[in-house]
Image 1 (cartoon, rainbow, N blue to C red):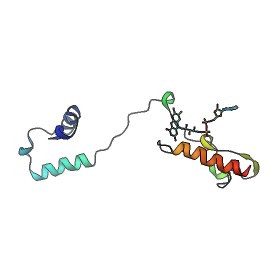
Image 2: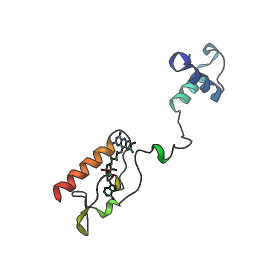
Image 3: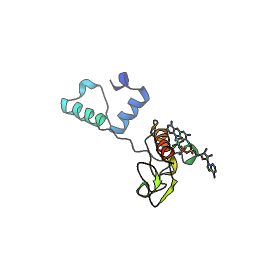
Length: 112
Ligand SMILES: Cc1cc2nc3c(=O)[nH]c(=O)nc-3n(C[C@H](O)[C@H](O)[C@H](O)COP(=O)(O)OP(=O)(O)OC[C@H]3O[C@@H](n4cnc5c(N)ncnc54)[C@H](O)[C@@H]3O)c2cc1C
């Protein structure tokens, strides 16, 4: 049944991991509910990363508490600005880092 909705090898791997075996007709309602719960609550824990070679964004950087959130200027050095990747702001992939770089750049550029 799972293989009708998921790639065959993936469905087989799920069966193997959970010890599900035999045709669906042999399952009681409570078994099916258990299978449904296992599928619904399935979580993935990555084993690692590909490292810096394929990294797209960095954690860490200039502490935002030292910067004006309106102008990106350093609070006690108003002629010094930090924007974008160098600041300790990290977005999920999907354009948020570009958006941050551009928006913080405009804020700083408008003030400078
Ligand atoms: C492979 C890859 C894919 C990515 N894909 C996405 C994505 O799809 N969406 C998204 O939102 N973000 C993505 N990012 C992240 C995004 O590119 C960065 O967050 C963003 O470009 C940061 O902009 P920035 O201007 O702060 O820094 P940067 O773009 O790194 O610009 C810094 C500039 O400073 C220059 N520079 C460095 N040192 C000196 C120096 N001493 N003197 C003069 N110039 C110097 C550098 O050459 C560089 O041009 C990706 C990043 C990578 C690496």
